[in-house]
Amino acid sequence: MKIVTISNCDLVESQGSGYVIVNFTRGLKALGHDVRLVRPDDCLALPGLNKARSLRLAWGFWRKAVRLIRDDEPDIVEFYGGEAWLAADRLRRWPKRRFRIVAHSNGIEPFCAEILASHGIHNTSDGRPPRWHQGRLRLPLARAFTQADAIVTVSQAEADYALRQGMQPVERVLAIDNALPAEFLGLERPADRPKVMGYCGSWLARKGVALLAGDIAAALRLAPAWRLHLVGVGREFRPEEHFPADLLSRIEVVGFVAEKAELRRLYQSWSIALMPSVYESFGLVGAEAMAGGCALVAAATGFAASLEHGREAMLLPTGRSPELREAVLRLVADEALRRRVADGGWQRVQQLRWDDSLRRLEAFYRGLTPASSS
Image 1 (cartoon, rainbow, N blue to C red):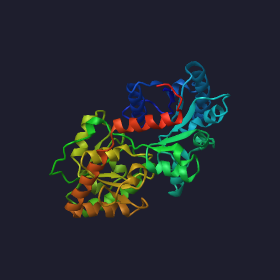
Image 2: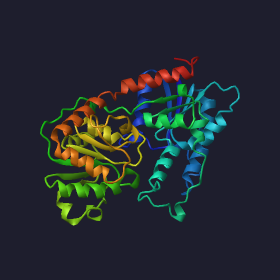
Image 3: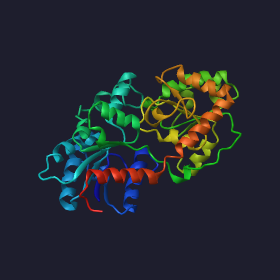
Image 4: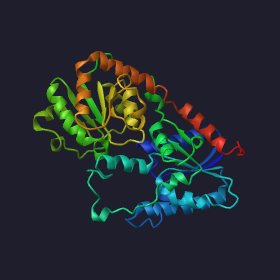
């Protein structure tokens, strides 16, 4: 097959969405398919402008796709991101069209907006409404999914939303859980772990950091032998701005981790991993922590929504206080439960393999284009 892939995010493997796009592209190429991968900066209209990025990217997606369709005559035109709304709408009407349009979502934007609104927060770093100079146009992002020929999501929770909204018929929606790097599979699980709970991720409102700061401070006071690690929160992060002074000696901050080997080591040094996100399309750090043998405590979003509560993870039904504190304290007080959840989670993520993900995506795309070249 000939595939054109146009991305709305930077193709950096250390970032979740970039990791997924790069590895799908690399894997499809290894299977013999001709894949043309396009970065967002190669599409962006009026690159010198500092405003209306989403609108400029939407216009650029359409222009770039038209040029590549004429040059490459692809079987599949694959878009990542709701910014494809304009391109999907226009390309759907292409005369004598033989290519298929796929919304390969790294998070269905209307779904994210709906969940954030239910929690009363905005998609800004602190969750507050955008300032006047950050105002965003209300764009018809849902059309990126309704005007495509098919949708691929990174979790079943995202696929279920697309089906509930009638974005596509069931046979045109595929959920593929994000695969883990090979070096995260089959990791040893030290029997005796330090009494450490850890969080890995940006310090953003949608990551549930307000819940984390409040509930974990309360849990640490009730569990004085335990410590907290905060990883990837940024080099400028100051724990004293978020946690009481009497707990600071038990909080360790690692602002940035560049190497996957170091990240694996950190996961293997925790007993409990925390992922209280309000919204995740998948939540790669949760799966990585499970691969490292941690007992995961997570809000029921993204990949975590498909896990079995009490066996593969401890799930927070609503993602509100005091659910995080209570779940953590259950694990702290019950070592057998903690080990059972860690073992169940470790077993669950061994299924997240790139060879299986690529096989499923290839078969789905072949089904969309039965007359395509091999």
